[in-house]
Length: 203
Image (tube, rainbow, N blue to C red):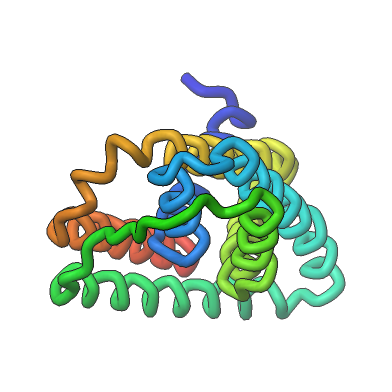
């Protein structure tokens, strides 16, 4: 049987994974860099460290703000649930109708500086990143008082594992995601997970 701290860490890991796996600009960029085998390590590390900073900010600061503003927790809880349900419906629609496939353009290698600037912009200028890490994970962490560090550690580990798996596993994924059905199955799985988290927040 898992200890309470380890169980919370596993919850943080699984919750973070379910949020981060959603197809977006940042993930597509990491996947592209992996497929082109360009600056993979530093790009994956940059994404993982950025997420860890934002997750820590959400878990630590959100608790303090919620204590000062008692109404904030239910507002964020139901607001987050509404967003997740909307995202689940969006993913479900994509799963049922999308015909997208992975297309990686060919060309000259992108310099490391340019790749890093693009990576940081896709991470820190994306409002969804703040919603996922600071707001949603911060809100969910309030359900585990006394185990916030474990939750943040699990969520940060999920980000680290995901980005490095995505970056270095991209070569093997290329023939898989060249087929639209693969994206549709992934979107369907994302829809189910998002809906489950939304219900967890509400109930």
